Amino acid sequence: MASRTSAPPIAIGGVGGSGTRVVAALFRDLGYYLGDDLNDAYDNLWFTLLFKRRSILLETDGKLRGLIKLFFRRMTVRERPAPEDAEQAFMLAEVDRLQHPREWLIERARTFSDASAELRNDKPWGWKEPNTHIVIDRMFAANPDLLYIHTVRHPLRMSLSRNQNQLENWGPIFLNRDVAIEPRLSLGFWCAAHRRILDLQRSAPRRALIVDYDKLCAEPDAQFGKILKFAGAEANPNALRRFKEYLWKSDNDSWRGEVDLAVFDPKDLAYVREMGYPLS
Image (tube, rainbow, N blue to C red; front, side, top):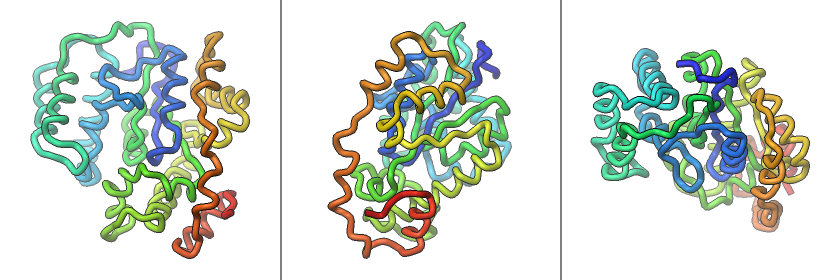
């Protein structure tokens, strides 16, 4: 299941709205294969089909390892998926999910089973899907070459974002309670997710990199070099220029006038401060 180049596979994830699209676009421009079924944000929708469901957290190690192998085969082998692989993909599309109806899932299974595939014999590869962080620890155990980039933004800004899909989907599990889509619980979810990834990075510093989107905007040259060094990738002549074009800066500080700190859990605010983020 190793890639056909010397570059290790790269996974990109983060809490929704944290800038994963920019990092994915960078790797696309560097020549990485990101999958045949992508949405406008470069999410790998095969990953969504296989792994974005609450039941994934209940899978045995053996079954999850099988799904990871299935995903990696589809990403690295050009031939039509084996019948048993296609059958497994369609089985995962049989029931509606919280954020994806059955019809949408069936279309993902169809593209997964499609005989046509991009020619990628000499390409490094990886994928971007924000929910990757939910299972990346177990994916690390299944593949020793896999690297992971986790993007973050100021957590108070994230708590006000319109993109609260992960809070809706994973919040009841991470927070062990029913959730409403509100800033207090959004910040609680961010803190819980960040603690997990920080623990992962501390245990495997050469395999996990946390990238702050606001730092990307402030110092793109330095952050560009940092990402490339981590991935063992080489820049093409236009990659840095395009990388800077992807960065959006206009709303970086717009959240500051909207935050009422009184609505948040003091323990979460203390963690935000501990992580080096100002509260005003």
